[in-house]
Image (cartoon, rainbow, N blue to C red; front, side, top):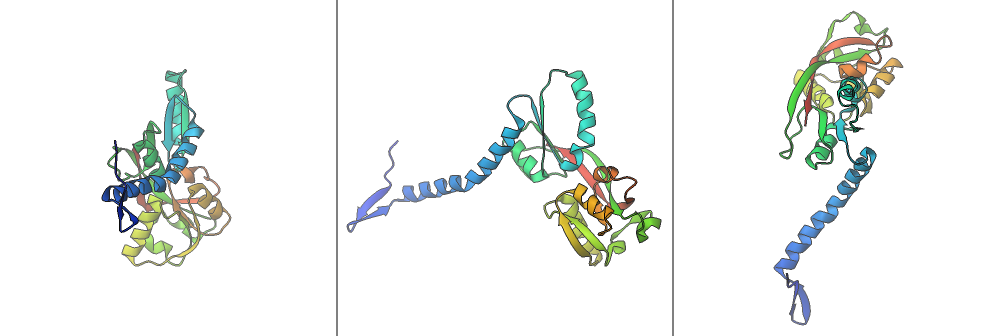
Length: 224
């Protein structure tokens, strides 16, 4: 295939329309190289062969191990790679066929994958054991007004739902800390640094060290 990239005009080389189009396509490839490198790093962690599972971190320490215990009992020769990561990243890996299945928090909009709802669980509000919330059964947005709050990362679906609920209720909170990991949020709460709303799986690991209350949010889990 031959493509004329330049023509000579008035003693100068001028790029053709084909050259401009090619340049645009190459530019897109170059921009995508960091993403390809990230994917390669993730794939390296999984090794070759077997079943590759991407999982939202909150599910990686409690829910998935219990499932894999039963799965491994039925398939003793199966090899499995487990990659905890954020839901959008897991969707990206699934769409690129770099992992076999992903467990994510809420659907991620991507036409290259399909999502099925597995279950929903109510989020919980975690507070220090001696906090004023100790006598409350359910925490709703007004309870959080002016509280020192520990927020999850901005890409986290729970964080987005919390922000939306607070805006709708006209509630302002004092966001002292922000972390992408619910387990870290629980650790900060245990040190008396504020309250947070997290998934129930992460909170369960801190039972006895935190006051755990129901909140008016849910935690949908889907498979991709």
